[in-house]
Image (tube, rainbow, N blue to C red):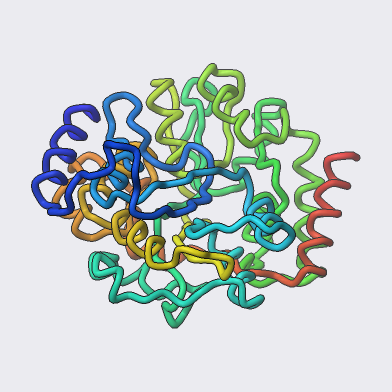
Length: 356
């Protein structure tokens, strides 16, 4: 199915764009240095579109592509090295930090006409309220994935991660920000802006959970859930969809009170030496056919309205985990850049919980 869709998208892209293919001889008209999350762009696998190759063919601009694993790794590379990047794709709270520290360039939207296709909700992000620095790349929510052979009823609250009947079969995020946020939400605290006192409250709740856990995980969640080794885990919507595709016993559950609404956005750091080429790349990523192809690969929602209207299949559109209703999204919280003091304290307390 994905392969067929991608062939259609590739044909539509070739028909809709007029830029010539002139890079076959190995001579390019310029370059763009892209720094992105690993496994976070459609790369030609399984018959899907190779987006970087398409961009190079259409623009004759060479893409130098490297990856990072965390927002903090991205930040440290920008802050402490002499490497020059032109396009980066950080998450919302890191974007806030980068803006506060004057580490991003304002975008010239005359060079990004496809910005018009971005959904209104994702045009002026919480982290960039004036919409000067960002073009949303993808978005989603956190939720729970659970094994229907081990969990008798569909969960409706994060409290399911504290269910004593599932002791020894529960997984939890192995990062302080996501784990603390779930705990804060259950304690009636808005995770968007928290204090050290809020961290203490959340830490106490997480300490109560610790004896019930099988383990703290990030990518290990895929193996644990797909092979039936655990009963329930919190994770990111797009990845939950992937897990469900690999194990028919898995289902998803969304907390009724909302969850974390997260997004990543394309930005240009101040170290950029190829700003115009960066804007061409950002614009290309929002070609509706390209945005749709990227969704097919990632399983994370596209913010591109035209891609959603014309190229996303109805099953995906009707899946509330991938595209929650506006009513649900209005109940969700978005991470902001908490102070270094609070974030350090959060990490310290989380490590302490794990060690006890």
